[in-house]
Length: 515
Image: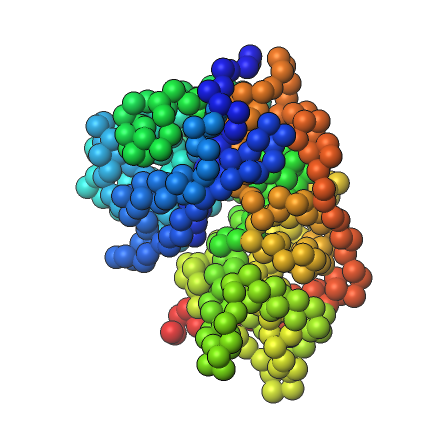
């Protein structure tokens, strides 16, 4: 794996996230120097959470225009929200609207494949979506030639290379971490199953090629440059496209065994790199990999800050009634900091933040709820503290399983929007996981920053240098960070909150059934 020739000095990471498409450029010291973004949102159409594919390109171009000194980009990479369902015919015509990770419409498929493989297949995985389409007898199935992810699609359109990174691939179909390929035994089982149902393709014929971090993955073509209005020239080399899980691990230097990270934004997930396999299959735990193929236990929650954002908007409208002009940053900072005044158990105020279904707690739909007893302490501080606890309560259910498996975890690093306000999210996450939580200065950068680092690794690694060594020695050796140990009172309060939260989930099930 020798170095590639960079066209310029900066590394560019692009991530198509759930709420923003963001581009981040880093300099030779791996410091973010410029960024641009575009806000978008999924839509619920015909029972499907989806995004318009044309908006991918509108958003990508808008984000790129925010990056100054684009002519200095030397290497780049594409990342996006993982999983979901993007299928194309042999000419790369989209066969059905994009089905995102938010959808919980593949319960039958996920259950059957989990039993077939002896390996947990979550509903949002690409393989669950494609098999559900087979089970549904959908017309387009016979014309499928390509199954990929959003990152894989954008990468292909820019480069003509149909490939994804190892971490991204591990959210499509189970990976053999020893052979660094799709699990051959499971591939054979799947092909036999689908052949019996009349499917005319084999799964490895429609899945993209897998590339490891540090491997070259093509360069922008003339056609690719035209797609983005020439904002980036042809010839810029790209690293393998990765999912937001892989970029999160990279952005937090959590790619070695006994390290972990929590990414918290629209969705929330923890990634813990394992020393040894878990003792059994858990529906609440996804088994994926690092960008270099090491096994990772992933706890994924579909719901994190969306409901909190909705409440913040209502509270902002309230302030505006009295003539206040509050910036978004100030609004969130004040509300987060106010929550610190609340009781450790939130004073009996309960929040279920489920806008979408939730795999960990086995719900196909969500109904956001606020519940309280007559004797609860209903204050703004308790209410907003409960909002923030709710963002990580589902994650805690999965993390408790890993604790029961005696999974060793030396460091847990937080990143994403939940950690932008200093101390608050970090303090609550330490209580939820009963472990020290570290946040770096780049905590708010998240995925696109991690993607820029993967691109830099492609360009600058030394012969034989692993991703783990590159990140530890060249990127994060002198990184500024803060670590908060769990406060015993917070841990006790969060545990008391969780007793009520688990009971609240029964109310949530009733709400889904009746509202």
